[in-house]
Image (cartoon, rainbow, N blue to C red; front, side, top):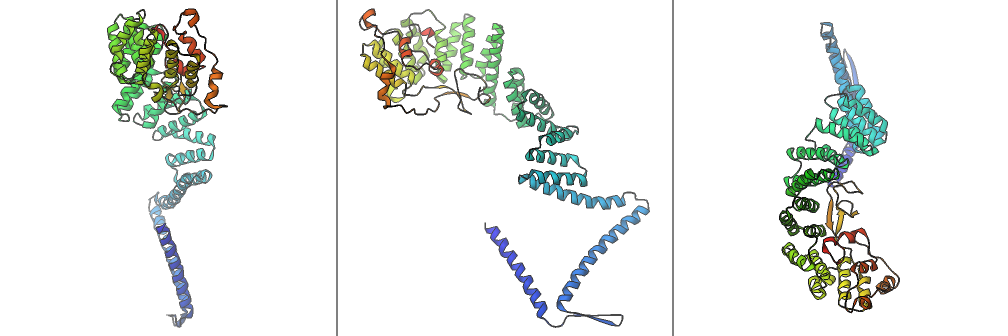
Amino acid sequence: MLWSLIKIVVFVGVIAAIAWGAGYLLESQGGVQITLMGTEYSFGPLQSVIAVVVLLVALWILLKLVSLLFATLKFINGDETALSRYFDRNRERKGFEALSEGLMALASGEGRIAMAKAAKADKYLNKPALTNLLTAQAAELAGDRRKAEETYRKLVEDDQTRFVGVRGIMKQKLADGDTETALKLAEKAFALKPKHAETGDVLLQLQAEKEDWSGARQTLSAKLKAGHLPRDVHKRRDAVLALSEARDVFDEGNDIKAREAAIEANRLSPDLIPAAVMAARGYVEQKKPRYAARLLTKAWSVHPHPDLAAAFAAIEPDEKPAARIKRFSGLVKSKPDHPETKMLMSELHIANEDFPQARRALGDLVEADPTARSVTLMAAIERGEGASDTIVKGWLARALTVSRGPQWVCGNCQHIHADWRPICSNCKSFDTLEWKTPPTAEVAMPGGVQMLPLIVGAVEDKSGADGAGKVADPVEIEDATLVDDASVEKSGKIAEPEPATQK
């Protein structure tokens, strides 16, 4: 702002000085007298100034003619490039002026003007490495995709600009959704410039989308060597790729190789929950339950998760509820106050029909951090303790309004997934799924929450048929809540008789 004001003041001052000088010359007396060969020439003040300007222009023209004369004399004396150098200097000056104006137009978003300037610069300079790049970018800005692709193909033909041309066509194919061609072009561009960070990211993304896990791991290693990835990030993403590779091997029926790949993935990133689950499964198949238990316990200490509990239960699928509670105490002791620990132990005690202990295990979770799962567990506890239908239906009604708890959520687009996967199914981002509680929107319902017990309906009371105080089937209680989506199912079913199948 200050600089603009200064420029305005200077401009006004110069104009005022010129106007004052012109007025002074018009009003002043005298002038310039020149005597040439006995003839006297008199010039007034204004005429003198005009004469000086004309003299300077004539002098400039004279110098140009002298320069051309010298170039001509050199040409006559055998210097065949003297004249071409003279004219080339002028052409080069005009070409670089056009190139500069084209770059300014490109930066200003004026694609058509930039294309015109690029064509003019190409005419004068004959340097396609510079002008073709400007033409391609200007054509993209102007929306002329055909012209842009033609120009990028010209850049591919030159060794100096091949990478720029391949990368430009690759970006066009990505914009068109042609990922097959884009992948091949990304591989070519990455081979030309292995240290180019953006190309490496695009190649890694495309390889992951095509489930080329082995190629993606090689690209990831190259990015680490180039210094484009922190070592901890590389370790985590390499584990994700190793896990994905293990899943493919498992689908092909090669159990031994899948187990080794899963164990390797868990070694690379112990906090990667799916890797820990698959590695534990591999140890169980190898008849190494202690290794599986140790691995899952370590993973639980980093990040408690229902899948870890399900894998831990699968180590001893036929054990009694009381024995299961005792064995699970070793798993959860590292995170006794975690919500997942509280809900898991409550489920185990419900399966053991120890409802007071299930209530104590759940603690104040339904008040401090209520979720559909914890509230439904509370309904099962109330039913097990012989509470009335009104109380049970109140808890079930509340389960419809509280958060559904942690789920696999993409950190990039917030899309919710029922299961973990390396690529977000919505935005195709790589390694963005996190186990967290997604943002929830409030739902306005007629009459508020008070209407929910009527919507839920009566819960069948089996106490008359099964004996006083006996809890109804927890699966029926869960169904009665109408909360049957994949997210709640993923966070753990409610107190089924066998905890081995509750996850």
